[in-house]
Length: 400
Image 1 (cartoon, rainbow, N blue to C red):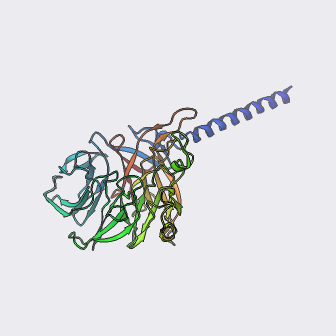
Image 2: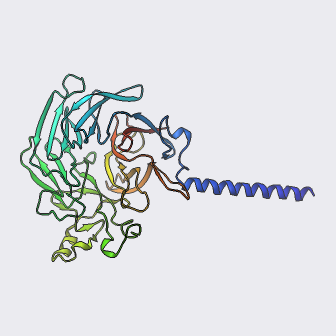
Image 3: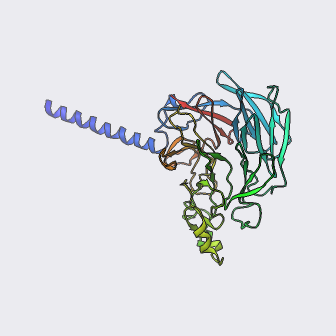
């Protein structure tokens, strides 16, 4: 009787253990498995956070939050394209609050790049730089560097990268899949620092929103969104889009001078857009298109991003990407902070990790969006700040 009782008790324990394991597996696959109470700070939604890291809320109630950039003297800049304003924030006890309006009356103000005491920024149709000389958070000097650039359209925003000898800006597609090879759109342009000597740097882009140099090199990198409705000519209907849900992937590109990156004719790694199959030079276009250095999932919408300079989080040399998330797929995808791991020997991407997920993946229910990352910056202490233009917030990723 005793042996039988012990056997039954052991079986109950075994069954209970299996049940708990199944429950944990289900929770893990629903998106909750990577989050513990210590992973998220006060006011942070139930994001999924990679073990060993923490997400804290550092700014809210400051209006629209799009692109962000650290300057000097503890200043954080935030672009607000809807109001045409860049605001400045200052930190106190871990919380960032508004200091002042840095510049105003710049509708569609977007990309930011701080260089040599100046904040460079882009507006649909123009490139500017401004600086604050007395520390009150407001620009005392505002200088227009270049204008007469294409403006408006579906992708009016543009990136800005400033180097010691030149600056670079990208101009996106006016729509989704437009042949604008004969125009100034779908291209990256290079200028002298005074706005002269405009030259074509690269072409075949759709809407690269941020350009940055890989640390220790002169290599220019950027993320580009894939075009939509890939399966339209293959008979897809609303709600039934097995091609469009997966094709084309979004791209992480190493932009080289004179390079052609495919859009709108070639997407992803050599995939043709059937809309252009009648072109006599279609094969030639495919042969000349430079393949992405790394591919993201379709509709992830990688926007702002940054190469990590510090090793405070163990990410030196890697790229941290703010993926804005999907609007055009049957399942919510993207909505994450993604790490693209670079091989220090080859200087090229070799793997990836999801650091933060911003969708609650409910089993048997409708998924819920908790935030839409827009931009990434590295703070002076080596932590990561990312903007969320869904709730108008800024979050910080640090080590536990």
